Image 1 (cartoon, rainbow, N blue to C red):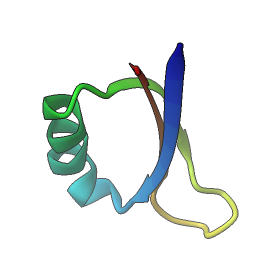
Image 2 (cartoon, rainbow, N blue to C red):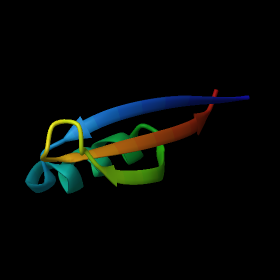
Image 3 (tube, one colour):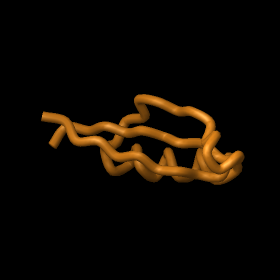
Length: 49
């Protein structure tokens, strides 16, 4: 079974945060621009429970 998490980041902070999440076992499965806010990115993660 997988669990999922969605986070919103400023582009300049994204790499640091994605590396932090990876250290906790999360894998990036999608990245898209945050069109609703007009800036930043939305990152979707998954990991095995």
